[in-house]
Image (cartoon, rainbow, N blue to C red; front, side, top):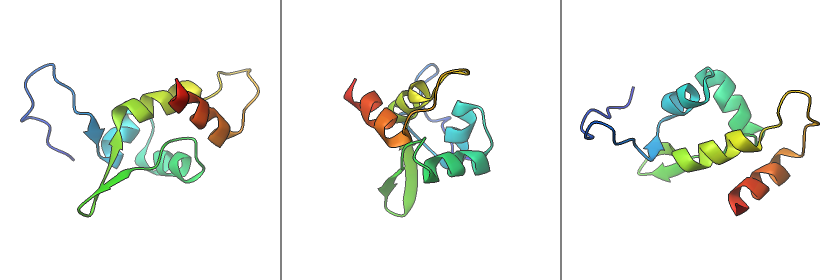
Length: 85
């Protein structure tokens, strides 16, 4: 698990690991990986062999997901719209 204890209280990281990304969305890391692979969650950024997700991109991808009862949109189209906001 990533160490965020160096941050002052109340300051949230803006780049997080796969496990933390999954926890932020409220799902397992394997389900999160599935959503990344099918385009419903963003791809990570690479930093010297580490992969990290941007918290704001995760939030935008989450908000682009359809609500229960709504027709599912093309995932890439919804993601592009979320990024444009």
